[in-house]
Image (cartoon, rainbow, N blue to C red; front, side, top):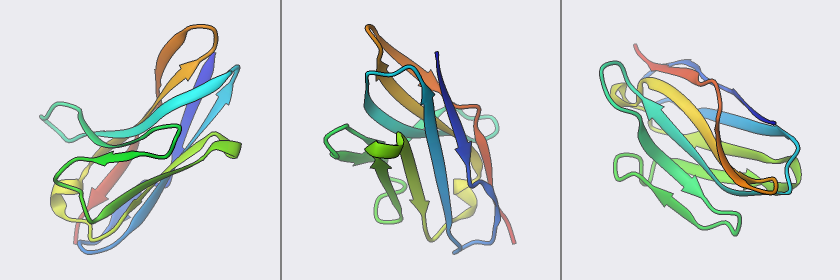
Length: 118
């Protein structure tokens, strides 16, 4: 089994910054894509950013230029640097990883709350 554990969420004022981290542990041969999703109250879960094992990235239009996804393959960890946060960024942020352990399986973290409020 693979576990994803997020950290770094919290309360921040508009215009502020936060950095989320997500570490993967368990039996893994290779982690392919890693990503961050978010779900705001009353809304569907949406993709925020994804990074491949080769380092290619893709961002939702709403966060381009403000958020940066990165990963440390040696630590099996993905990060999300969030700058210039707005009220619309308030959501539960979920880590996602596609892991090859003989079969390709997608895993989710438990989520971390990000609240942007003055």
